[in-house]
Amino acid sequence: MIIRDAAEADLPAIVDIFNAAVRTRMSTAQLDPVSVEERLPWFQEHSPDSHPLWVAEIDGQIAGWISFHSFITRCAYRGTVELSVYVAENFRRAGVGRALLEKAIARSPSLEISSLVGCIFGHNEPSLRLFERLGFKRWGVLPRIARLDGIERDLVMVGRHVA
Image 1 (tube, rainbow, N blue to C red):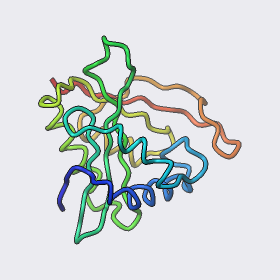
Image 2: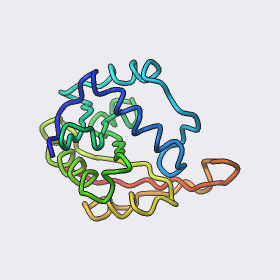
Image 3: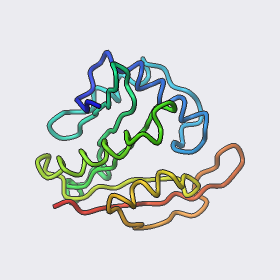
Image 4: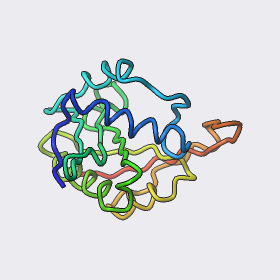
């Protein structure tokens, strides 16, 4: 497995992985699939020096990705980022998500990041377990805040200090 900065050529695979997650209603509040064109501005907002977007590549295929994005844009939160991790269905339970998160934790201090936050649906137990195994704690719950296909879902905030 190679974890590297995402290139624009990776965007179709990133979008495919994301759209597969949209259909499951497990890991994103996005309810409709997105296009590569729609995600291009999001891709361009990422910077390798502060808010990276990394892909995990296995045998030439994009197996998953992790993105860093601003948690809250006010100055006092500058050292905190929110992470999003997505893994292609055929690579799940193969250590891809773990490897991406481990790299995020290890690299955060050099990116001047002191705290990592994840926003995970309460019914997404595999993701909650993964983050917790890597030292994230449950920092809060927003009960029944999301409505997915008429079902109210909790949003669990997990976090970890890295510096």
